Image (cartoon, rainbow, N blue to C red):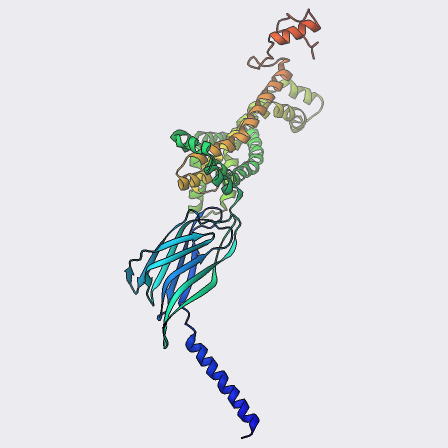
Length: 450
């Protein structure tokens, strides 16, 4: 064998010997099957971290450092340790020290080989921003090899946990928890039960979706009700008996039964009969059918309130009955019934709350579910606010329409119309401008008839 072959053989033998030496001297991995879990889905709140791992069969653990990422606050943390050797729980009395984002735990007694170890760390304040974060485990292990027991220090930074960024209303609600004035408010049972600020903040975006659905149901149903109401009104005013009988029966049945019963008939009775549509479509049809009966009477009363001389004048101009209705009677009728129609729209909007009984997620359904979840009545108060956002402006509009109608019909406001107040200051100003008008009675029109 030549010199080069012997040199190559020597190098190969030396490499194999070094590999075996390193394998003999290096300790085995002391932890296996390590995992970490969190009990919160969003950040910015006290969170419990659970670190679960299994020690190797030839390694025992005497201490462990749990290293959190920067930004995690461990100042209020507390922890406990659970150790299982097989199925037997072993009592452990650990001690811990916090330095920055690191929790150093010393086990007493040490964690035996082949044990299941679980460390639960409570009340760790996490950053608000959601992401996937690393968690590093550094531990002291005692391994048993051919050279005897060996104490080593190892790191395992492969653990990962994640959570999402909380919505803005949740962040505001948590901030309100720290405000002393809010805490004092909630300490009064009546106030905290019906108007808890934290729940007001979280209820508004949740109930907003149901509010939009309730408005959509009415906006789709009311135009259909207007068309149906006009048709039924003309049928009831017909000189032909059968249409008049049908219209009277329809109006009496719908107005004489509660809307709640009509909802159950539509959603349960029709489906038993094999007629199935989507819940929202069925809700729109129920609202339209119910409201059309009331609108029919409103339209009929409005049409019949028009002086018969209007018909005669239209006929003298050569108009047919339908032309008279289209160009003379209906425009005047709409002007008169508009306030009553607006009131019917308000009632129909409030009646959408009844659909919560059959599972449509409108405003009241969201409120019911949230009340059941938080055991507080604040969501009901918030839902009332949502109803008032729409109903109060409409009520004011109805009042203004009634006042304008009374002025246009009779030349004066109705008796209950609010008159402008003339106090001492206003009278003094009027006297400085025109002393003859200063003491004029309120009933006299001082505007020159404008």
